Image 1: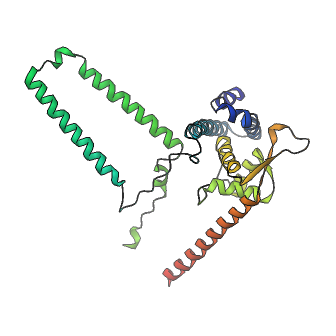
Image 2 (image 1 turned 45 degrees about the horizontal axis):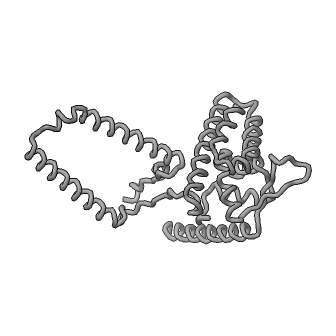
Image 3 (image 1 turned 90 degrees about the horizontal axis):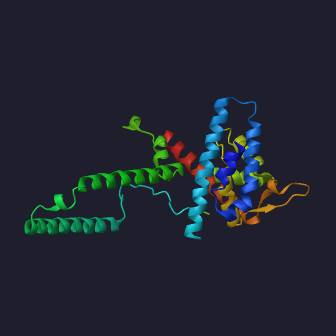
Length: 169
Length: 106
């Protein structure tokens, strides 16, 4: 496992690795040694926790490097409040997007009326292209969500803390 | 440093408030003082340590006869002051909560 942890530490930025890499590896190995008499399940849990910690840590340090001194992690928890769920700018942006879509439909209808339904012959792979784009975007969105979930930034973890106060009603 | 502090950072600072410790000792102490509830990974620990070092809440120092891989960390006066302020805030909250809950019970 030593080599696995060493490889994971290579994911950290170079300067960070130089400063803390050896120290971190020494801490991981020391922790692992203390688990020598524990069960396999505990060892696996330890390895998974350390791997996740190193992956998230490396991502966080790269983000910090990319974004300079804008604080710790740019993705902060957004506390949802019942009276204000979206920034006000969302309404404006949504209207803008809707206007864009309506205009595009209008334009496409005009083109079709003028030149006929030639799109299928010009670009027969269009449905496959859309399907490919949809799948790519879904995978991308799932990856971003998984990354944020790993960083505990989605707020999903806090759902477990919700207490229903039905007894007060 | 964003306030209020997360539980992990708070426990880490409390661990260093007692005495200087190196990475592995911090992990052990955080687990012990949280009753086994909080187990930090090394990545998380060093993420927090880096941030606290940058904000000058803690400092790193070389111990004699100890290898470079086992550098210890200690609380700075700024860190201790901020920790005390955070404790004061929590004490106030606890007191307020106890008062409000007692009033509700009546």
